Image (tube, rainbow, N blue to C red):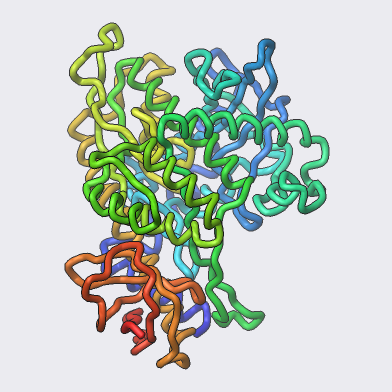
Length: 494
């Protein structure tokens, strides 16, 4: 199967689930017009600071071209540090209500498939004009955080608009190898050694602060397609975490949490990312017991993290499998709209009641990837309204509709990604009927029991011998059949 055939399957999968794989002519025409006109305001003024001289840099995948955020940091007296995160001001090029915005609002997310990426925004924007490219002046919304030596915020965040300039484009693998002492400093990172060390230290502080409150340190992996020189799929390899990915994740979590609190404190309704207490806590209790641990009868994030830390130390080689089982039992998060809170009344009943169980934060709003997620673009518009002293650009009922639609479309995008991945895996497995594999049960929904194998990294359905299996079990599985057209992979217990 070549990449072109796999992409056609991905396009059809998107269409069947209400996602748009291609941009309409009106979108492309608007992109051309916006590119010719330029952003709304690149000049430095009373509401746009000139921060181009700061040592901004990015860390992302080697081939990433849609750069959503930069960061830089400096040590402060007394042990605190100032972290600045610059988020691409996509709103300057994507006006609300236009054809580009309408397409983004329809899909709500970029779709990442084994056949390639279907971007939320046209690439002339997301990988060019609204990307924080190396050596290019760009508008950004900057979130400045004072972080104490204990990982807590030492002051309210300072959020403002600015012009920034990326001075070093770095990649996860190279930075992680250098931080771990496994490789040399990447050439692009020359002169940024102190920045990387300080960022790494700040990430560790922020992570420690959250983990003391029950944030879960999980180690999940995803599948990365590998094509040969002729463009034919030859493998699906695991693509896991590393120190640089964790560094960026910890900084973005802190930025997203601070953004949500900033909006609430300024009386603005917000679009939150929420993960409530696990609905299947009893299954997590049983999973812990099967691994020699104990959890209380009611949801307790710190207790769950202590159990996970113990298992990570005792059996690091199988920790990714345990992490996946926990992720499945925690369930997926939802987008929710929260009404404006009265800034003068911290006990306002309109204050958010939810939070994010896995991250151990009470307030959380996606804000750091506006090129890739529509909720982040909405949040950026809310932030800019606060900075301009303007009312919310979205009424609460509009935010509620956006939240429900984004949750639904994210689910559809995930299903497309899984279908295309399984189609690719079915192609790779079609000559291995009858072989046995080590499996990990990942779901026991009403439509069947599912499990994942490691090579190729993919899920399939257990159609025989699934009785009594629970999420987290590790049965041996025999491959019964595959369907490359439908992306079906069927197993039975060996």
